[in-house]
Image (cartoon, rainbow, N blue to C red; front, side, top):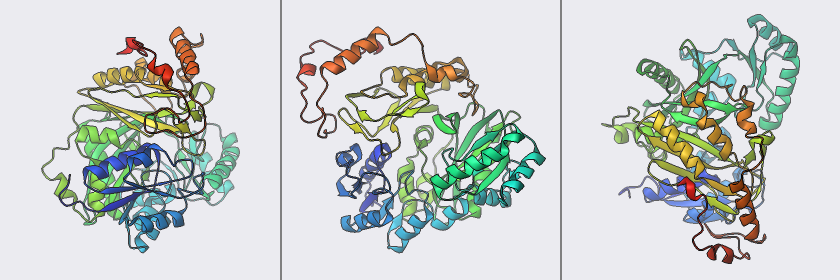
Length: 510
Protein backbone atom coordinates (compact mmCIF):
# COMPACT_ATOMS: atom_id res chain seq x y z
CA UNK A 1 0.00 0.00 0.00
CA UNK A 2 1.26 3.44 -0.93
CA UNK A 3 2.15 5.71 1.99
CA UNK A 4 1.04 8.80 0.08
CA UNK A 5 -1.68 7.79 -2.38
CA UNK A 6 -2.29 10.36 -5.13
CA UNK A 7 -6.04 10.47 -4.39
CA UNK A 8 -8.38 9.47 -1.59
CA UNK A 9 -11.34 8.36 -3.73
CA UNK A 10 -11.58 7.68 -7.48
CA UNK A 11 -14.77 7.04 -9.41
CA UNK A 12 -14.57 4.51 -12.25
CA UNK A 13 -16.81 5.58 -15.13
CA UNK A 14 -16.98 2.13 -16.68
CA UNK A 15 -18.04 -1.47 -16.13
CA UNK A 16 -16.92 -5.04 -16.76
CA UNK A 17 -13.39 -6.38 -16.59
CA UNK A 18 -11.64 -3.01 -16.95
CA UNK A 19 -13.55 -1.56 -13.99
CA UNK A 20 -12.62 -4.61 -11.90
CA UNK A 21 -8.99 -4.23 -12.94
CA UNK A 22 -8.97 -0.53 -11.99
CA UNK A 23 -10.54 -1.38 -8.61
CA UNK A 24 -7.64 -3.73 -7.98
CA UNK A 25 -5.08 -1.08 -8.90
CA UNK A 26 -6.73 1.50 -6.65
CA UNK A 27 -6.81 -0.86 -3.70
CA UNK A 28 -3.09 -1.59 -4.11
CA UNK A 29 -2.43 2.14 -3.74
CA UNK A 30 -4.73 2.57 -0.76
CA UNK A 31 -7.34 4.51 -2.75
CA UNK A 32 -11.07 3.94 -2.29
CA UNK A 33 -12.91 2.91 -5.46
CA UNK A 34 -16.36 4.17 -6.46
CA UNK A 35 -18.30 2.09 -8.98
CA UNK A 36 -21.23 3.40 -11.00
CA UNK A 37 -23.80 1.09 -12.51
CA UNK A 38 -26.95 0.82 -14.57
CA UNK A 39 -29.99 -0.98 -13.21
CA UNK A 40 -29.11 -4.24 -14.94
CA UNK A 41 -25.57 -4.05 -13.53
CA UNK A 42 -26.62 -3.60 -9.87
CA UNK A 43 -24.89 -6.87 -8.90
CA UNK A 44 -22.18 -6.86 -11.56
CA UNK A 45 -18.61 -7.95 -10.85
CA UNK A 46 -17.27 -4.39 -10.86
CA UNK A 47 -19.89 -3.29 -8.32
CA UNK A 48 -18.97 -6.17 -6.03
CA UNK A 49 -15.26 -5.36 -6.42
CA UNK A 50 -15.56 -1.66 -5.53
CA UNK A 51 -15.57 -0.08 -2.09
CA UNK A 52 -18.68 1.98 -2.85
CA UNK A 53 -21.26 2.08 -5.64
CA UNK A 54 -23.63 4.68 -7.04
CA UNK A 55 -26.65 3.82 -9.21
CA UNK A 56 -27.01 5.73 -12.47
CA UNK A 57 -30.38 4.29 -13.44
CA UNK A 58 -31.45 3.01 -16.83
CA UNK A 59 -30.12 -0.03 -18.67
CA UNK A 60 -28.65 1.10 -21.97
CA UNK A 61 -25.26 2.80 -22.15
CA UNK A 62 -26.92 6.06 -23.22
CA UNK A 63 -29.13 6.00 -20.13
CA UNK A 64 -26.26 5.29 -17.76
CA UNK A 65 -22.52 5.10 -18.48
CA UNK A 66 -22.63 7.65 -21.31
CA UNK A 67 -24.71 10.22 -19.43
CA UNK A 68 -22.13 12.88 -18.49
CA UNK A 69 -24.47 14.65 -16.09
CA UNK A 70 -25.24 11.45 -14.18
CA UNK A 71 -21.58 10.47 -13.94
CA UNK A 72 -20.53 13.88 -12.62
CA UNK A 73 -23.40 13.91 -10.12
CA UNK A 74 -22.37 10.44 -8.92
CA UNK A 75 -18.83 11.70 -8.43
CA UNK A 76 -20.11 14.60 -6.37
CA UNK A 77 -22.37 12.36 -4.26
CA UNK A 78 -19.54 9.90 -3.56
CA UNK A 79 -16.97 12.55 -2.70
CA UNK A 80 -14.51 11.36 -5.36
CA UNK A 81 -11.62 13.57 -6.38
CA UNK A 82 -10.91 11.96 -9.75
CA UNK A 83 -12.58 9.95 -12.49
CA UNK A 84 -10.95 7.06 -14.32
CA UNK A 85 -12.81 6.40 -17.60
CA UNK A 86 -11.27 3.00 -18.43
CA UNK A 87 -11.62 2.44 -22.18
CA UNK A 88 -14.68 2.76 -24.40
CA UNK A 89 -17.69 4.77 -23.22
CA UNK A 90 -16.44 8.30 -22.33
CA UNK A 91 -12.71 7.55 -22.29
CA UNK A 92 -11.89 9.45 -25.51
CA UNK A 93 -14.55 12.13 -25.17
CA UNK A 94 -12.82 15.50 -24.91
CA UNK A 95 -16.08 17.20 -23.94
CA UNK A 96 -16.36 14.87 -20.95
CA UNK A 97 -12.70 15.33 -19.99
CA UNK A 98 -13.17 19.10 -20.06
CA UNK A 99 -16.39 18.86 -18.02
CA UNK A 100 -14.54 16.81 -15.40
CA UNK A 101 -11.81 19.43 -15.21
CA UNK A 102 -14.33 22.29 -15.08
CA UNK A 103 -16.05 20.58 -12.15
CA UNK A 104 -12.80 20.79 -10.18
CA UNK A 105 -12.09 17.08 -10.57
CA UNK A 106 -9.15 15.19 -12.09
CA UNK A 107 -9.59 13.22 -15.31
CA UNK A 108 -7.31 10.17 -15.27
CA UNK A 109 -6.36 10.42 -18.90
CA UNK A 110 -4.89 12.91 -21.37
CA UNK A 111 -5.86 16.56 -21.33
CA UNK A 112 -8.84 17.43 -23.57
CA UNK A 113 -6.76 19.66 -25.83
CA UNK A 114 -4.44 16.79 -26.74
CA UNK A 115 -7.44 14.51 -27.18
CA UNK A 116 -8.99 16.93 -29.66
CA UNK A 117 -5.77 17.16 -31.65
CA UNK A 118 -5.44 13.38 -31.88
CA UNK A 119 -8.94 12.05 -31.39
CA UNK A 120 -10.07 11.98 -35.03
CA UNK A 121 -8.24 10.18 -37.81
CA UNK A 122 -8.08 13.34 -39.92
CA UNK A 123 -6.70 15.54 -37.12
CA UNK A 124 -4.25 12.86 -35.97
CA UNK A 125 -2.95 12.36 -39.51
CA UNK A 126 -2.30 16.09 -39.84
CA UNK A 127 -0.45 16.18 -36.52
CA UNK A 128 1.62 13.14 -37.51
CA UNK A 129 2.66 14.78 -40.77
CA UNK A 130 3.67 17.93 -38.89
CA UNK A 131 5.68 15.82 -36.40
CA UNK A 132 7.58 14.09 -39.20
CA UNK A 133 5.95 10.71 -38.58
CA UNK A 134 5.57 8.51 -41.70
CA UNK A 135 1.97 8.32 -42.90
CA UNK A 136 0.21 6.20 -45.50
CA UNK A 137 -0.30 8.04 -48.81
CA UNK A 138 -3.81 9.43 -48.71
CA UNK A 139 -5.95 12.47 -48.05
CA UNK A 140 -7.24 13.89 -44.79
CA UNK A 141 -9.64 16.19 -46.68
CA UNK A 142 -13.28 15.38 -47.33
CA UNK A 143 -14.50 17.68 -50.10
CA UNK A 144 -17.36 15.38 -51.03
CA UNK A 145 -17.81 12.01 -52.66
CA UNK A 146 -16.66 13.09 -56.11
CA UNK A 147 -13.35 14.46 -54.77
CA UNK A 148 -12.69 11.31 -52.71
CA UNK A 149 -13.46 9.08 -55.69
CA UNK A 150 -11.13 11.07 -57.92
CA UNK A 151 -8.35 10.92 -55.34
CA UNK A 152 -8.80 7.17 -54.92
CA UNK A 153 -8.47 6.63 -58.64
CA UNK A 154 -5.37 8.81 -58.74
CA UNK A 155 -3.42 6.74 -56.19
CA UNK A 156 -4.73 3.41 -57.42
CA UNK A 157 -6.36 0.42 -55.80
CA UNK A 158 -6.57 -0.97 -53.19
CA UNK A 159 -7.62 1.85 -50.87
CA UNK A 160 -9.09 2.11 -47.39
CA UNK A 161 -12.13 4.32 -46.83
CA UNK A 162 -12.24 5.36 -43.16
CA UNK A 163 -14.47 7.39 -40.87
CA UNK A 164 -12.59 10.55 -39.88
CA UNK A 165 -13.85 10.41 -36.29
CA UNK A 166 -13.95 6.65 -36.03
CA UNK A 167 -12.46 3.71 -34.26
CA UNK A 168 -13.06 0.01 -33.73
CA UNK A 169 -13.35 -0.63 -37.47
CA UNK A 170 -16.65 1.26 -37.77
CA UNK A 171 -17.06 3.16 -41.01
CA UNK A 172 -14.06 1.40 -42.54
CA UNK A 173 -14.13 -0.24 -45.97
CA UNK A 174 -11.45 -1.91 -48.12
CA UNK A 175 -11.95 -1.17 -51.82
CA UNK A 176 -10.09 -3.23 -54.43
CA UNK A 177 -12.09 -2.16 -57.49
CA UNK A 178 -12.56 1.54 -58.23
CA UNK A 179 -16.10 0.81 -59.43
CA UNK A 180 -16.98 0.07 -55.78
CA UNK A 181 -15.64 3.36 -54.39
CA UNK A 182 -18.91 5.28 -54.48
CA UNK A 183 -20.84 2.54 -52.64
CA UNK A 184 -18.06 2.11 -50.06
CA UNK A 185 -17.96 5.84 -49.29
CA UNK A 186 -21.75 6.01 -48.98
CA UNK A 187 -21.87 2.97 -46.68
CA UNK A 188 -18.99 4.32 -44.61
CA UNK A 189 -20.75 7.65 -44.19
CA UNK A 190 -23.95 6.00 -42.98
CA UNK A 191 -22.12 3.85 -40.44
CA UNK A 192 -19.93 6.75 -39.26
CA UNK A 193 -22.96 9.00 -38.79
CA UNK A 194 -24.76 6.35 -36.76
CA UNK A 195 -21.69 5.48 -34.65
CA UNK A 196 -20.01 8.86 -34.13
CA UNK A 197 -22.46 11.52 -35.27
CA UNK A 198 -19.89 12.59 -37.87
CA UNK A 199 -19.97 11.30 -41.45
CA UNK A 200 -16.71 12.81 -42.69
CA UNK A 201 -14.40 10.31 -44.36
CA UNK A 202 -10.72 10.05 -45.22
CA UNK A 203 -9.08 7.86 -47.84
CA UNK A 204 -5.72 6.09 -47.72
CA UNK A 205 -3.78 3.68 -49.88
CA UNK A 206 -4.29 0.16 -48.52
CA UNK A 207 -1.13 -1.51 -47.20
CA UNK A 208 -1.46 -5.28 -47.70
CA UNK A 209 -0.17 -7.56 -46.43
CA UNK A 210 0.66 -5.64 -43.26
CA UNK A 211 1.15 -6.14 -39.55
CA UNK A 212 -0.50 -3.95 -36.94
CA UNK A 213 2.14 -2.67 -34.50
CA UNK A 214 1.38 -0.15 -31.78
CA UNK A 215 3.55 1.78 -29.36
CA UNK A 216 2.50 2.30 -25.75
CA UNK A 217 3.38 5.92 -25.08
CA UNK A 218 3.08 7.79 -21.80
CA UNK A 219 3.37 11.48 -21.02
CA UNK A 220 3.32 13.58 -17.87
CA UNK A 221 2.28 17.14 -17.15
CA UNK A 222 5.91 18.29 -17.19
CA UNK A 223 6.59 17.70 -20.88
CA UNK A 224 8.18 14.26 -20.67
CA UNK A 225 6.95 11.53 -23.03
CA UNK A 226 8.31 7.97 -23.05
CA UNK A 227 7.78 4.80 -25.05
CA UNK A 228 7.02 1.53 -23.29
CA UNK A 229 7.64 -0.31 -26.56
CA UNK A 230 5.49 -2.21 -28.98
CA UNK A 231 2.60 -4.60 -29.03
CA UNK A 232 1.55 -6.61 -32.07
CA UNK A 233 -2.17 -6.71 -32.78
CA UNK A 234 -2.23 -8.22 -36.27
CA UNK A 235 -4.78 -10.97 -35.56
CA UNK A 236 -8.03 -9.16 -36.28
CA UNK A 237 -11.52 -9.85 -37.47
CA UNK A 238 -13.45 -7.05 -39.15
CA UNK A 239 -10.72 -4.59 -38.12
CA UNK A 240 -11.17 -5.52 -34.45
CA UNK A 241 -8.35 -7.11 -32.45
CA UNK A 242 -8.60 -10.73 -31.34
CA UNK A 243 -5.12 -11.58 -29.98
CA UNK A 244 -2.38 -9.18 -28.89
CA UNK A 245 1.20 -9.81 -27.87
CA UNK A 246 4.37 -8.12 -26.70
CA UNK A 247 6.98 -7.87 -27.96
CA UNK A 248 6.44 -8.36 -31.70
CA UNK A 249 8.35 -11.27 -33.22
CA UNK A 250 9.47 -9.09 -36.16
CA UNK A 251 10.47 -5.86 -34.41
CA UNK A 252 14.20 -5.60 -33.75
CA UNK A 253 15.95 -3.06 -31.54
CA UNK A 254 16.45 -0.54 -34.35
CA UNK A 255 12.83 -0.64 -35.50
CA UNK A 256 11.63 -0.51 -31.87
CA UNK A 257 13.73 2.61 -31.31
CA UNK A 258 12.52 4.34 -34.50
CA UNK A 259 8.84 3.61 -33.86
CA UNK A 260 9.21 4.72 -30.24
CA UNK A 261 10.85 7.97 -31.33
CA UNK A 262 7.98 8.62 -33.77
CA UNK A 263 5.39 8.13 -31.03
CA UNK A 264 7.32 10.37 -28.64
CA UNK A 265 7.66 13.12 -31.26
CA UNK A 266 3.92 13.08 -31.87
CA UNK A 267 3.14 13.07 -28.15
CA UNK A 268 5.43 16.00 -27.45
CA UNK A 269 4.00 17.98 -30.35
CA UNK A 270 0.49 17.94 -28.88
CA UNK A 271 1.46 18.19 -25.19
CA UNK A 272 0.26 14.65 -24.46
CA UNK A 273 -0.04 13.47 -20.87
CA UNK A 274 -1.11 10.10 -19.45
CA UNK A 275 -1.49 6.80 -21.33
CA UNK A 276 -1.92 6.62 -25.10
CA UNK A 277 -1.18 4.34 -28.01
CA UNK A 278 0.28 5.29 -31.37
CA UNK A 279 -0.79 2.70 -33.93
CA UNK A 280 1.13 1.83 -37.10
CA UNK A 281 1.03 -0.52 -40.07
CA UNK A 282 4.26 -2.37 -40.85
CA UNK A 283 4.75 -3.61 -44.41
CA UNK A 284 6.82 -6.55 -45.61
CA UNK A 285 9.81 -4.31 -46.34
CA UNK A 286 9.96 -3.05 -42.75
CA UNK A 287 8.42 0.37 -43.47
CA UNK A 288 5.97 1.65 -40.87
CA UNK A 289 3.09 4.06 -41.38
CA UNK A 290 1.02 5.98 -38.86
CA UNK A 291 -2.62 4.94 -38.43
CA UNK A 292 -4.07 6.74 -35.41
CA UNK A 293 -3.70 7.43 -31.69
CA UNK A 294 -5.96 5.87 -29.07
CA UNK A 295 -6.07 8.53 -26.37
CA UNK A 296 -6.72 6.17 -23.46
CA UNK A 297 -5.64 2.99 -21.76
CA UNK A 298 -5.84 0.09 -24.23
CA UNK A 299 -7.69 -3.19 -23.84
CA UNK A 300 -4.35 -4.94 -24.41
CA UNK A 301 -2.37 -3.02 -21.79
CA UNK A 302 -1.69 -6.16 -19.67
CA UNK A 303 0.82 -7.58 -22.16
CA UNK A 304 2.92 -4.42 -21.82
CA UNK A 305 2.68 -4.66 -18.03
CA UNK A 306 3.89 -8.26 -18.05
CA UNK A 307 6.96 -7.66 -20.22
CA UNK A 308 8.04 -4.32 -18.72
CA UNK A 309 7.06 -4.77 -15.06
CA UNK A 310 5.25 -1.41 -15.09
CA UNK A 311 1.70 -1.16 -13.71
CA UNK A 312 0.06 1.22 -16.21
CA UNK A 313 -2.93 2.05 -14.01
CA UNK A 314 -0.61 3.01 -11.15
CA UNK A 315 1.36 5.14 -13.60
CA UNK A 316 -1.84 6.76 -14.89
CA UNK A 317 -2.86 7.80 -11.39
CA UNK A 318 0.63 9.09 -10.57
CA UNK A 319 0.72 11.26 -13.69
CA UNK A 320 -2.88 12.46 -13.28
CA UNK A 321 -1.98 13.74 -9.80
CA UNK A 322 0.88 15.77 -11.27
CA UNK A 323 3.70 13.33 -10.65
CA UNK A 324 6.69 12.99 -12.95
CA UNK A 325 7.32 9.89 -15.02
CA UNK A 326 10.91 9.86 -13.88
CA UNK A 327 9.83 9.46 -10.26
CA UNK A 328 8.41 6.00 -10.97
CA UNK A 329 10.47 4.93 -13.99
CA UNK A 330 13.93 6.17 -12.98
CA UNK A 331 16.42 3.35 -12.84
CA UNK A 332 14.02 0.78 -14.31
CA UNK A 333 15.18 -1.42 -17.15
CA UNK A 334 12.19 -1.24 -19.49
CA UNK A 335 13.63 -3.64 -22.05
CA UNK A 336 10.92 -6.23 -22.83
CA UNK A 337 11.47 -9.44 -20.85
CA UNK A 338 9.92 -12.69 -22.02
CA UNK A 339 6.75 -12.81 -24.08
CA UNK A 340 3.09 -12.10 -23.25
CA UNK A 341 -0.06 -12.85 -25.26
CA UNK A 342 -3.63 -11.73 -24.58
CA UNK A 343 -6.82 -13.39 -25.82
CA UNK A 344 -10.09 -11.46 -25.77
CA UNK A 345 -12.87 -13.75 -24.58
CA UNK A 346 -16.22 -12.60 -25.93
CA UNK A 347 -19.83 -13.73 -25.76
CA UNK A 348 -20.25 -14.34 -29.44
CA UNK A 349 -20.52 -17.10 -32.01
CA UNK A 350 -17.64 -17.00 -34.54
CA UNK A 351 -19.33 -19.91 -36.34
CA UNK A 352 -22.35 -17.67 -36.99
CA UNK A 353 -20.68 -14.52 -38.24
CA UNK A 354 -19.51 -13.45 -34.75
CA UNK A 355 -23.10 -12.95 -33.67
CA UNK A 356 -23.10 -11.47 -30.11
CA UNK A 357 -24.67 -13.62 -27.40
CA UNK A 358 -26.41 -12.88 -24.13
CA UNK A 359 -27.99 -14.95 -21.38
CA UNK A 360 -27.15 -16.84 -18.21
CA UNK A 361 -23.59 -18.01 -17.57
CA UNK A 362 -24.31 -21.24 -15.74
CA UNK A 363 -20.69 -22.06 -15.03
CA UNK A 364 -17.52 -19.97 -15.24
CA UNK A 365 -14.13 -21.59 -14.75
CA UNK A 366 -11.16 -19.42 -15.64
CA UNK A 367 -7.64 -20.76 -16.02
CA UNK A 368 -5.15 -20.50 -13.16
CA UNK A 369 -1.48 -21.23 -12.74
CA UNK A 370 2.03 -19.81 -13.15
CA UNK A 371 2.27 -17.17 -15.86
CA UNK A 372 -1.51 -16.86 -16.23
CA UNK A 373 -3.52 -13.69 -15.59
CA UNK A 374 -7.26 -13.32 -16.09
CA UNK A 375 -8.93 -9.91 -16.11
CA UNK A 376 -12.59 -10.90 -15.81
CA UNK A 377 -15.92 -9.15 -15.43
CA UNK A 378 -18.19 -12.18 -14.99
CA UNK A 379 -18.91 -15.09 -12.66
CA UNK A 380 -21.08 -18.22 -12.48
CA UNK A 381 -24.72 -17.22 -12.35
CA UNK A 382 -24.22 -13.86 -14.06
CA UNK A 383 -26.75 -12.92 -16.73
CA UNK A 384 -24.85 -11.39 -19.64
CA UNK A 385 -26.79 -8.36 -20.86
CA UNK A 386 -27.36 -7.51 -24.53
CA UNK A 387 -26.91 -3.81 -23.76
CA UNK A 388 -23.10 -3.67 -23.73
CA UNK A 389 -19.92 -4.87 -25.41
CA UNK A 390 -19.60 -8.63 -25.76
CA UNK A 391 -16.21 -8.99 -24.04
CA UNK A 392 -16.40 -11.14 -20.90
CA UNK A 393 -12.75 -11.39 -19.89
CA UNK A 394 -9.16 -11.29 -21.06
CA UNK A 395 -6.85 -14.27 -20.68
CA UNK A 396 -3.20 -13.19 -20.60
CA UNK A 397 -0.15 -15.42 -20.34
CA UNK A 398 3.57 -14.75 -19.88
CA UNK A 399 6.47 -17.10 -20.58
CA UNK A 400 10.22 -16.74 -21.17
CA UNK A 401 9.80 -16.90 -24.98
CA UNK A 402 7.06 -16.81 -27.61
CA UNK A 403 6.89 -20.56 -28.20
CA UNK A 404 6.37 -21.22 -24.49
CA UNK A 405 3.77 -18.42 -24.31
CA UNK A 406 1.82 -19.98 -27.20
CA UNK A 407 1.86 -23.37 -25.51
CA UNK A 408 0.76 -21.86 -22.20
CA UNK A 409 -2.09 -19.92 -23.80
CA UNK A 410 -3.29 -22.99 -25.69
CA UNK A 411 -3.45 -25.02 -22.49
CA UNK A 412 -5.07 -22.16 -20.55
CA UNK A 413 -7.79 -21.89 -23.20
CA UNK A 414 -8.44 -25.62 -22.85
CA UNK A 415 -8.96 -25.08 -19.11
CA UNK A 416 -11.31 -22.13 -19.66
CA UNK A 417 -15.02 -22.85 -19.37
CA UNK A 418 -18.03 -20.58 -19.90
CA UNK A 419 -21.20 -22.69 -20.00
CA UNK A 420 -24.61 -21.30 -20.88
CA UNK A 421 -23.99 -19.04 -23.86
CA UNK A 422 -21.77 -19.18 -26.96
CA UNK A 423 -18.23 -17.80 -26.60
CA UNK A 424 -15.17 -17.55 -28.84
CA UNK A 425 -12.91 -19.69 -26.61
CA UNK A 426 -12.60 -22.56 -29.10
CA UNK A 427 -12.03 -20.08 -31.93
CA UNK A 428 -9.16 -18.50 -29.99
CA UNK A 429 -7.62 -21.90 -29.31
CA UNK A 430 -7.80 -22.81 -33.00
CA UNK A 431 -5.89 -19.65 -33.87
CA UNK A 432 -3.24 -20.19 -31.20
CA UNK A 433 -2.77 -23.81 -32.28
CA UNK A 434 -2.53 -22.89 -35.97
CA UNK A 435 0.92 -23.32 -37.51
CA UNK A 436 0.88 -19.83 -39.03
CA UNK A 437 0.32 -18.23 -35.64
CA UNK A 438 2.91 -20.43 -33.93
CA UNK A 439 5.50 -19.37 -36.52
CA UNK A 440 4.45 -15.68 -36.23
CA UNK A 441 3.36 -15.42 -39.89
CA UNK A 442 0.79 -12.75 -39.08
CA UNK A 443 -1.06 -10.08 -41.04
CA UNK A 444 -4.16 -8.00 -40.47
CA UNK A 445 -6.09 -9.99 -43.08
CA UNK A 446 -5.03 -13.49 -42.01
CA UNK A 447 -8.44 -14.45 -40.59
CA UNK A 448 -10.15 -13.20 -43.72
CA UNK A 449 -8.21 -15.81 -45.70
CA UNK A 450 -8.72 -18.57 -43.11
CA UNK A 451 -12.51 -18.82 -42.63
CA UNK A 452 -12.13 -22.37 -41.34
CA UNK A 453 -10.64 -20.99 -38.10
CA UNK A 454 -13.95 -19.27 -37.34
CA UNK A 455 -16.13 -22.06 -38.70
CA UNK A 456 -14.52 -24.76 -36.55
CA UNK A 457 -14.98 -28.51 -36.93
CA UNK A 458 -17.98 -29.58 -38.99
CA UNK A 459 -18.53 -33.01 -37.41
CA UNK A 460 -20.77 -31.90 -34.53
CA UNK A 461 -20.13 -31.73 -30.77
CA UNK A 462 -17.91 -34.31 -29.12
CA UNK A 463 -18.98 -36.56 -26.26
CA UNK A 464 -17.45 -34.31 -23.63
CA UNK A 465 -19.40 -31.29 -24.88
CA UNK A 466 -22.62 -33.28 -24.92
CA UNK A 467 -21.99 -34.58 -21.39
CA UNK A 468 -21.35 -31.05 -20.14
CA UNK A 469 -24.56 -29.83 -21.78
CA UNK A 470 -26.61 -32.62 -20.19
CA UNK A 471 -25.08 -31.95 -16.76
CA UNK A 472 -25.64 -28.22 -17.18
CA UNK A 473 -29.33 -28.84 -17.96
CA UNK A 474 -29.70 -31.17 -14.99
CA UNK A 475 -28.47 -28.59 -12.52
CA UNK A 476 -29.79 -25.49 -14.28
CA UNK A 477 -30.62 -22.76 -11.74
CA UNK A 478 -33.91 -20.96 -12.01
CA UNK A 479 -33.85 -17.57 -13.69
CA UNK A 480 -34.96 -14.60 -11.71
CA UNK A 481 -32.60 -12.91 -9.32
CA UNK A 482 -28.96 -11.97 -9.28
CA UNK A 483 -25.98 -13.83 -7.98
CA UNK A 484 -23.12 -13.19 -5.70
CA UNK A 485 -19.54 -13.21 -6.92
CA UNK A 486 -19.23 -16.89 -7.62
CA UNK A 487 -22.53 -18.30 -6.37
CA UNK A 488 -25.39 -19.76 -8.38
CA UNK A 489 -28.33 -17.54 -9.24
CA UNK A 490 -30.55 -16.92 -6.25
CA UNK A 491 -33.64 -19.10 -6.15
CA UNK A 492 -31.90 -22.02 -7.85
CA UNK A 493 -30.70 -25.24 -6.32
CA UNK A 494 -27.00 -26.10 -6.15
CA UNK A 495 -27.58 -29.44 -4.46
CA UNK A 496 -26.85 -31.39 -7.63
CA UNK A 497 -23.32 -29.97 -7.72
CA UNK A 498 -22.76 -30.97 -4.10
CA UNK A 499 -23.89 -34.52 -4.87
CA UNK A 500 -21.26 -35.02 -7.58
CA UNK A 501 -18.75 -36.72 -5.30
CA UNK A 502 -15.52 -37.44 -7.10
CA UNK A 503 -16.68 -35.69 -10.29
CA UNK A 504 -14.16 -33.37 -11.99
CA UNK A 505 -15.05 -31.38 -15.08
CA UNK A 506 -12.46 -31.76 -17.86
CA UNK A 507 -10.23 -33.91 -15.67
CA UNK A 508 -7.90 -34.70 -18.53
CA UNK A 509 -7.08 -31.06 -19.20
CA UNK A 510 -5.11 -30.46 -16.00
